[in-house]
Image (tube, rainbow, N blue to C red; front, side):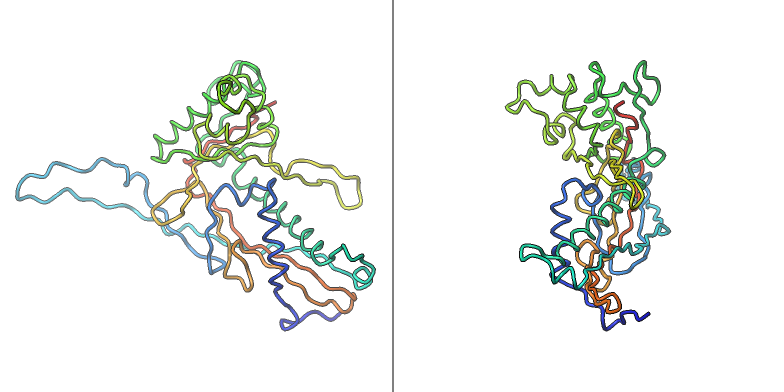
Length: 326
């Protein structure tokens, strides 16, 4: 069976733009919104981690006349690395389908949006595995139905729960431990829905101009810059079986974290997404869409590729809230 050669493959800029636009409009997806995206030219490389302990030690001393000043240094770890594997998916547009399509339809655009959505679901689920679960961050807190003990809290669907106090307490703790105030709260869809009806939250905003809870209001209540809600959903059933729809990201959890808005050397962040923009034809998010001929199928293939690596950089910059709601 013949295969396309390198000269047959074309990275389609217009279709790539469609895909990028679709990413920006897909408000349900969370993977590209929480942590900074770091464009990289190489598929794999190292990055540096500075010693937090050295940067926060009180080592300055009074200097007597004609004496040297106190001095010191900091350790640097250059062993952390990233590798951005290529994730790909395609849809074939048959010649007969294209010929029978009505004028209002655009098979190439439809295939591009379909391919992009499948890739976005994969990316969101990978993000959840990397960041939105227990055993990842510096502290896990677990919601319980009654009598919370150590590292537990009363679930936020309970009418007498105090989510604002719980979250603000963690804002204070993380700031003390890292020197960085958490600025992002990520909520599962069901966690967000419960917070919108939580009496503690409603009582705090009852005298504001906007009585309805929304992410901006919650950000103010929790003392963070942004509240993001993960709403992407996916079909967990096998192909051909009845659809079984479920949220792609744990809908009953939450994550409080510091995300560096301007990634740079010597600046921590809970995580970074390394996007391989150096891949031939890739856009700013490491995305490219190709269209090439599959003559033996009498079809044009629309193929999407994304190359990224989601790295946990500073786990002490975050707290994960498991079972935040029942």
